[in-house]
Length: 309
Image (tube, rainbow, N blue to C red):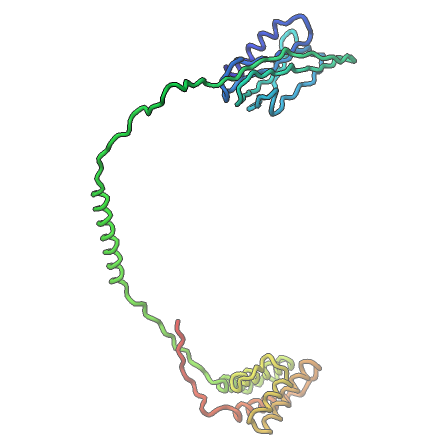
């Protein structure tokens, strides 16, 4: 019996109680079940519209029974008052008779507070009685089936041959990957430096450029040349550090002194905001050209080196 049908029965039964303004009813759809079976129960309360009731809460267990599910509380209305009801489903996994204790209902009407209780419900849970004198047999005896594995063996051999043939075919078709070699032209550092310096000389850039930018560009060309020609980290070194390294080389004393003069003037322009005359800009460009021409290697010619791509 489901909870809806049980609720209808409870509704009919509680409507038949006309002796009191408040009535409470606790009932189950059966009083006997096997362990593990579910039993539906319902709690129904009747009260008039002026009465406030305290709804009794149903927990996770009730009198030793497990509460599996609870329905929402609903309300029905008729001419005699209101009917409150809630269904819940219980079960047990041990045999025995369970007494579902009486449920107490408290209600308030104006200044009056009173309570009524339901009748207890007894539920018995039983187990299946087994006859230990009878022996148990399978419904059917095991069947003998003749089966040959030759088909699976043959299919396995054919599949192996097909896979090996495919691997061999793909291996024969595979061509060795050709390595592409790109030739990179290596330009000696003095050629790059002289090209840049001559371009600055032909354009007389010291006349048009901002003084600071001119001296920065001029010394950058010389620093890059020193890095490539003498393997000195001139782009990261200070002027003093560059000269310390230059002084250990075989460069002539005259070229060392001119390079130091150029680097010092560039530092004064950049950091001390010195403003040399345009004629001095041409002078230091000539010093840079002389330093590159006097220190370049005669063996340095454009060559090609290969890089694997």
